[in-house]
Amino acid sequence: MPTIPKFTISHPSEASASFEAARIAQIHLLAMQTNPLLHAQFPTRKSQDALECFLARDTQQKIGPLQTSTRRDVGIWVARLEGEDEIAGFIRWEYPPPNVDKGKGKSDEDKKKKLEDGEIKYLPGCRREYLEEYARLASEAKERSGFMEIRCWHLTFVCIDPKHQGRGAGSLLTRRLLELVEDTQEEHGPLPVYLESTMEAVPMYERLGFKAVDGFEMEIPALGMISGEDEGKAEGEKTAYREVCMVYYPKGAK
Image 1 (tube, one colour):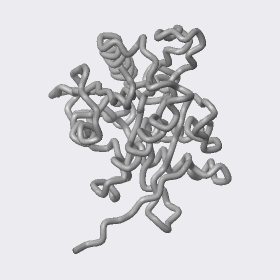
Image 2 (spheres, one colour):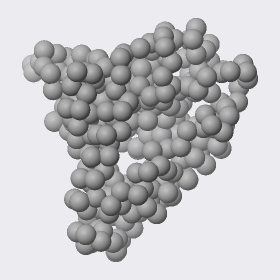
Image 3 (cartoon, helix red, strand yellow):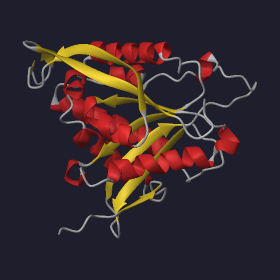
């Protein structure tokens, strides 16, 4: 019987922040290669190279000391094979905004824009219309489900290098985040965890206790239907891309 690999979870190394951030960005692109949305938004090798550089810079800015009691905006943990240095996967999330007035709602300042709605849409070669449409639909789904006005954690990415997929790294990273949510209730309160999931990842999140609360669909070029290495213009067959909005409620959360 083959040995099941063991993974260790840690914060990215500050001493090697540039290298670690580059590896995390590389994994992000590798893990998303089978996702047609990536190819609709960044249809050429040149545009995906620009995206990888952007993600590496953004990640390096977010890497800091591992903290469970001091509030930060964004958290990143990585999974490594036990005894090895190379990163096999990562999880990224947004901490809940501060509850200054003890109310349930969030200020406009605390309603963070999705990554797709920021400067990423100005990268060379990207198809901005698919970035903006995705950000709009995801925002509308979050609004419909009521989580735009509710303080919550937001799990934004769980990405595993394809050569390590199917070995439990994604589940382990997510479980560790849920443990953090439980352990920091005194600081943040018993708040839910919100995410948007690809259809392929829904079963994993369901096993971990997440429930579907909404979803959205958009029409994009079918995988392999992009033409033009430089222009990246879409043509031909379209396909429906779907995501499911899911929520995990820790003990004590409403």
